[in-house]
Image (cartoon, rainbow, N blue to C red; front, side):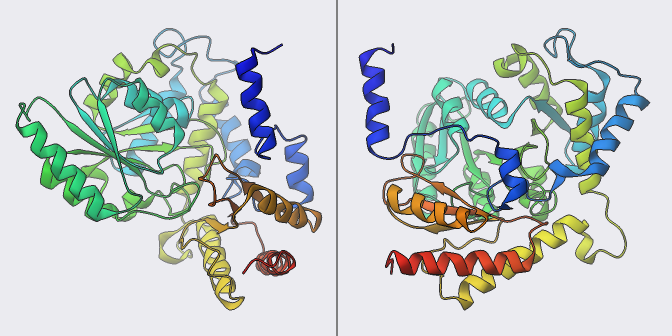
Length: 400
């Protein structure tokens, strides 16, 4: 039996209709229903060419083993790591890339080891849980600013800069962290303005590109040509269709993390096949043919077309009041109340559309939502039909 106080917490969550459960036969369900729930934005997780290319890479390197055999600092740093990190760094035009086992590991490793006692971390209030956990493990002080609010951000940045100048500003450092695409809202901050403000006040800027890599080609930081001015994290479990993550930055930052990031040091490395898949996915993403418009890969171009089509249909069906403005693959319709949003999600599923309900406490109470994840492989007819079904459900529940 659980201790009473733990059972009480479970009972409270169940009473609020917010108890999380693991889904059964998830992959089978996604094959049967139209997928509007997975992070596989480009369909790379199902790509045969990536699957076979990963096998070719293993054969080329004469690697026939199932596991890494140990930490990367012991026996687990097989040679495909070097190939993948070099290709990733070249793709993003940075000095170095360091692969971690997951985005969670990368964020925890970075924020628990880089900011030091006496430093300050400023973060967007909607930042991902992995960054929050890393910050909690840090000895630095941390303060949040309002979501995507430049005025509030500069107010807080100026305040902390003034305070640190009174206590040896050259010793104490300000770190600023945000996401280029937020996972629950699908919106983006003004990254250029934030970069300029960080430089104005001498702060270090860190950007999590988990939901931008592959959606906006190689990410919004590259698109805005800010790569030489920020450190960033890219993850491979979303549009890249595989697993793992990397921190991008200088050679010195890479060396520091190898020496002090505990989530890298004290864990078994990724197996060769996982790293080979990362490399194969990057090669697929950057495999641009002359016929492709605007220098985008076929999958990215198709995804961008679907995002625009979906947004146009939202407007045509007068559903803008529900949807959070977003140019990304994440389109969220706010439908308050766990019970209501779960019921509408179930109705969509009964019609053959897999759209996940995001409940409180994952999002604040009153901000529960349906999160539509769009993909390159969704058809425009599917996009049109799911919005028509949503409109009917909203009418049924008299949500105006």
